[in-house]
Length: 141
Image 1: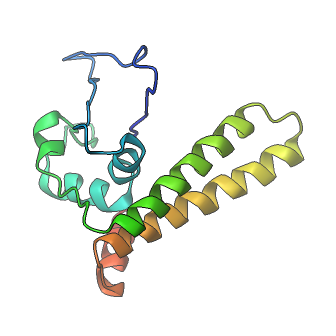
Image 2: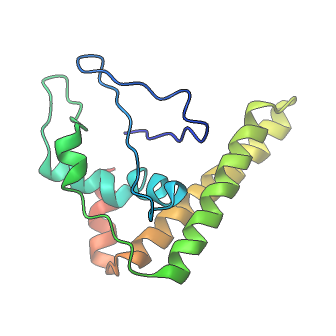
Image 3: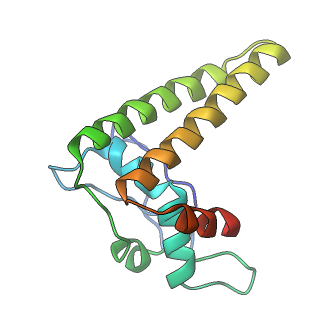
């Protein structure tokens, strides 16, 4: 799955057979926090474990499967760290897109991958996952 954020509200689209739709978070939900959870290995594992696999091997990420995903918002301090990491990830992605040299792209890609792993680590912590649960999730990915 790949979830994206549209801060201006001008780019998201709705569609049925095309497979895309928009998610509007509740007013008390930070959209960057929600973005982190939806793109996390935890939620991806949950949806692929409980959802519907298509003939092609892909999984359905229809609204009915996303609605049932356990979205945790318990830890405010941890949530703030996750939001900060997501903002750093988005900034790094923008820099990566405009990198001029192969060396610069390699460095930024490594930073991006490191931030991505950190976000997943924070989400594991948010859900109080054990090492065995983390291994199970990461084995499926």
